Length: 196
Image 1 (spheres, rainbow, N blue to C red):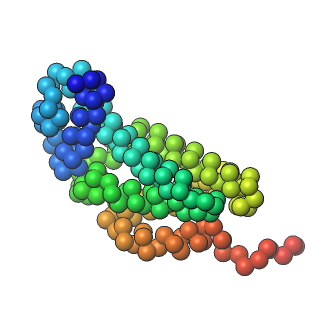
Image 2 (image 1 turned 120 degrees about the vertical axis):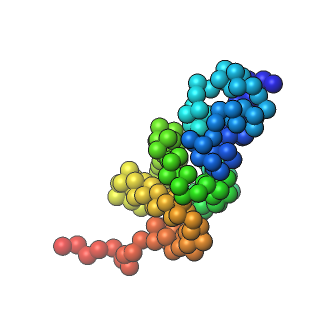
């Protein structure tokens, strides 16, 4: 098996184990057995169990981004692209084996372990969102006072959706997403504010 194939096999085998048993209860022996590789082979590709888990989180993040990017690519208008970004995120999180098949106790254990990778993924998502907003502003489709402030607010909305989905309530997110997107895209103001 080629080096990348071994890494991919370990990551693929590790995801359901971490989701079901958590980090502490998943042994390196179990990871090697599930991936059909020797323990020494596993250590030749990963420094330790933490490195395996980091790659599992990174792979899951890339899967989420691929779903979001596909939804954005299918959209014709800037508004539809932003909608696609959010709905692609919800679809991908809802389909995530790592997130949806993990107990709350295991999630509490796993989240701090993924801090560095999570930060990396958060920054990549922020940049994707910033590009969408900037492209919309440049095209005259969006009007914002400050792109970076707007993107931070949109990031906060995504984070809130993510937390709600981690709380096992994806139906709530699906129900409320159209209203949230309407608010984000249209705002609350009925007309331009009167000048003082």
